[in-house]
Length: 259
Figure (cartoon, rainbow, N blue to C red):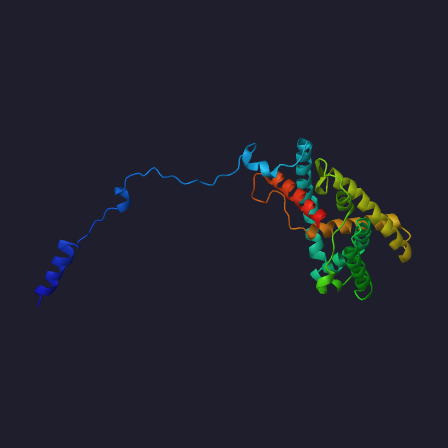
């Protein structure tokens, strides 16, 4: 029986396990010359980006303003948003956002009237009345619970577009972002409507120092607006972020006017 282990050692160790080598079948195939189209990244200045073309004669200046806005966003606005979120809990921030949105209903209503959009005007009026009364001066957005009372979005730029005013050149507004000549004029109109509205609100509330209150309100509006926009500069993953933002903004505004 002592020879059995010896035999196993001779078979497994001395002789070794048999290894079968198989050639890769693909190596024996002849080249067929077949090639498939490979996706490639669009080239700046090439035809690949033609569909994203927007009238932008002020592009060099706009790009500088875009970079300025990116720096302002990174070093001022986003840190302010961070402090805002740290100081105020989420329910309080929601209440602030609701109040601002409720105050914005009146300029929206004016633009609905200017465009003759009766249904949208009726919805906006209903929303304002419900949220200003049952919603505790807009702190609670009760109207949005009704599917037929969703918030409408109209501004002076859309009103001008509705009546046939063209976009004009693309323009990046310092501190505000993408726009065009028509919407920049509209922004001035919206600011005027809001100013007139808030002066009446301050008067009804008995506010004496309207200047300081208006500045504080503007700061809160700016931080609240930035806190609710998820976009981050230079984080889209595209080397053509400027063109992408310009294209998306322009198309969105076209759809806003058509609605």
